[in-house]
Length: 315
Image 1: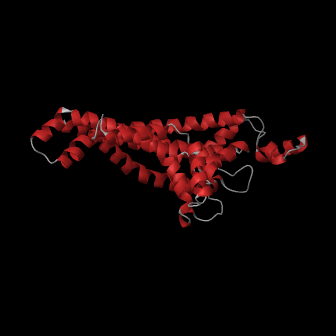
Image 2 (image 1 turned 180 degrees about the vertical axis):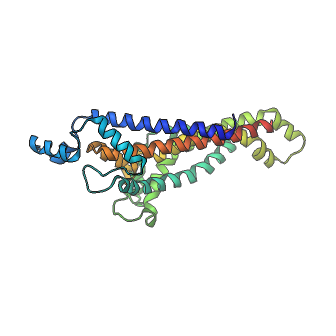
Image 3 (image 1 turned 90 degrees about the vertical axis):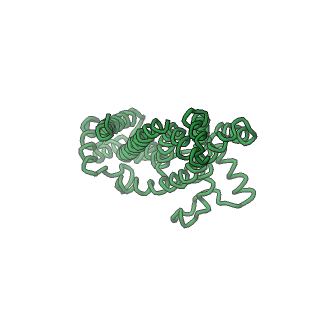
């Protein structure tokens, strides 16, 4: 299948997936006990007050009607207003997107080169001390949950040593306080580095044993060219797919990490919206996260599609 046809097919599939996510999120949110009217009414709600609030918020209308109205408005870029506050949903998403994108970008900027280096070094020292050390370390770090690693880093480097702030509390631009980003980025990058470097190592081991690499060595090609031009393109194809899942995981917002370091990202906004039954915010965040998933996985599939033929040619 040609690349343009493949792109069109995947884009159409992605649109369907986003619509399904919106419907499923709406149905799940509707199934939760209580609603935004109950949340606004407080701890001792009066039935008459709740009924009035439901009427004002439009929650007394049929679910299908509210969903259809929201989808039609979203197609025009209008995600509506929060049910529990004066803000537009788009403004809430915009305010939450910045911190998450910053954390994700910094994490990926470290993860990608470091994973490649560790994977290539381990593969070139297969069975040696460096390979065993990298393999053992990646297995160990991967088995530690994010919340445990986050609490450990805060205890050691923030509370005891006082090298970094324990949380991002204090407001202001996160970039103006880079020290608050160090610990959350370390927590976020540990598991992706483990998985990506192991995939690169496995791919490089197979590539270095392959006939085309052996032939390239026999004809006297420089070792660096053999590594980068012949072995590495074959090794990174599985890692590209994993990188897409990692990016999706980061953009989606690691709720535990954001909660530990008090970072107001997408994950925190989603938890707050679900707890207050703020359906427009939940739906808006669902659309954003579903769109990110579709776009990131499409980019990964296209990259794999481009790399795979190159790898075959090198054989």
